[in-house]
Image (cartoon, rainbow, N blue to C red; front, top):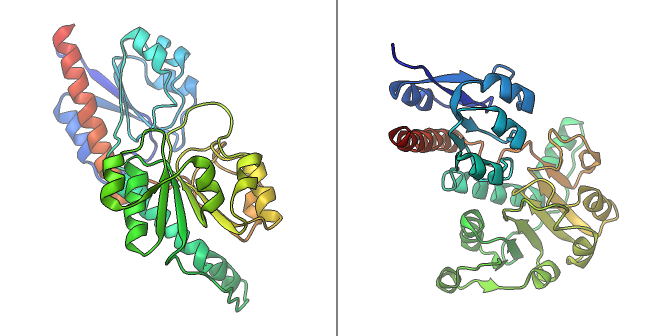
Length: 314
């Protein structure tokens, strides 16, 4: 009798854009164990659902050392997404658990959403919609993206895609990165700046860095150094921006507006919801039908490949 090979599927939304990824698992002899709660799993729930699983298709839930040690027999964590900061990578290496991700698939979706929220802020789209629904014929004067100084903090896949889109719309784009692709910058005729200069000179600052450290990168000091009347966009990682300091900067009028798709604590319930000059979205960066299906398929393919290699050697 064949051994049942179980795979925990932790993202609650997995499969809503098509059954192909789950069918691919079944065709390879794996039994998917689905998230029954419709939300992010807590560590004890992961342990309970993941008993006897060879692999996990992971979302953003915490896979700490205790979880990884408890799930005896776990051989692969395949992230459906870019970041792996929710996984204890050191413990995974120690236990011989392969950790993979899908860095390519979300690029276009996050870049397009970035452009969307920038235009929303500049033209008061969301605010005008809210006012009309309240019965107010609000016509707030907006601004053009054309010739605006846009600073991109982080020039990885997503940052570069954003830069190309915004440059195509007539913005003056500059960037900052710890390991810049100088050949790409030269081919696109984009300026490379220090982070300090980017903060001081940008009309719009959009953040696209991978960061798993402690503390905020954009705090009171950095927000104070930004150009008066600038806009701040964060679609990268929650916790990068000090949300309390951002609230004060917006409330006091030092910044003209902000858009956030990621937060230190999700779901977000904080005071930024009170402000009219903020666009808030519930972690929608990769939440486009085509992108989700591509990410899920790639995550499954990564897992199947990793487990096939492990099975051959065990």
